[in-house]
Image (cartoon, one colour):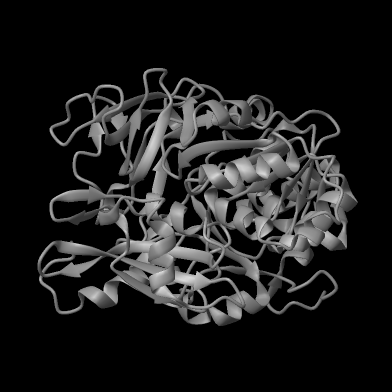
Length: 499
């Protein structure tokens, strides 16, 4: 059963299947079948799942578009994915009209559920006008994700589901129990954008499991999040580090105002989470915070429970679901325990992947069936993985490798810092120096010297940012993903190199 935030609009599994089968018949009439693509340009909405379920019945893939993206990026994804149809909220489609190929069939949804007069071909009218498709669902192809475009145009990620034994929907159903620990009567609340792979996938796991209720919030607001947990007696939540920091920075009297006793499980993905933040959430809400490491290319790869996080601070856990890990140096030799290198993984459960647009792909991405998405880290003697950073984000200053994630984690411990991004900028002497862009906590003084002084007990001297800039808002989405290129590129204009 699905519920939408304050509207409490419910869609039970029978209604979901009924409408999805009717919409699948619409797709069939547009000749959309196995391995073809539909695009979705929507805010969080229960109809997301009607559309994705319809895709499952005909074996189509679905591309979820970031509705904040500029029109040229949307156009590039639509063309690269060869989408055959697009579904979207009517106002978003109007804004993106210049990005839509003129021959692309368009299906609109109302801006809100009280608006029944959406222009164009309306989803509700199509569902009502078509009989349900009969027969069994096709093997799941699922989400067709695109990278964020932080190193150029977004790349499409095609997972090799054809080589996987059985239906991936069965794998999702299993993950609802083994990964999310969802049981009959549980209630999972997701208010991160469904255009991101992790919250979308976790929601799909819950649907496939069929035993828990799924609540979808329109967007994340820290106090509203607490109110929803109390009002709906939520048992499971999806969080990313940015959300946790905003929750922790609520005034103490606001945090104590809400009863969170129903919570027993929180899952965090998307970005490395500071041990200080993890411990603070577990101290406040109870030992509920589980962390997973994954990528759009490979799904989830490692997992760590709250009790393990205390014993292994900073780790993102051990491999799950038959995943294997290797840490390799630049010569592709195996690194011993404790030595940092590039993280390579073998994820047989979801099959191999390929890119539709290989521009910007990492060299040496595949080695003996193991692949990397450019993450850097190390394994300890017990097989726990520790991430240092993304290889593409690494700063090399005076020949020393510096990983921005460590500096960002330290900055977020400071009361004056609401959000931050760290990256390398040109330095004639050292090659690169460290720049930190800070979104200050409201009411605090913007004082770079004070920030550096507070960082000295937390970081080695060479990791203290040489340059600190303040921004009213950083280009970071609710998921925690930041577009550092927008902050970094101006510093490299006119330079022959970018590192």
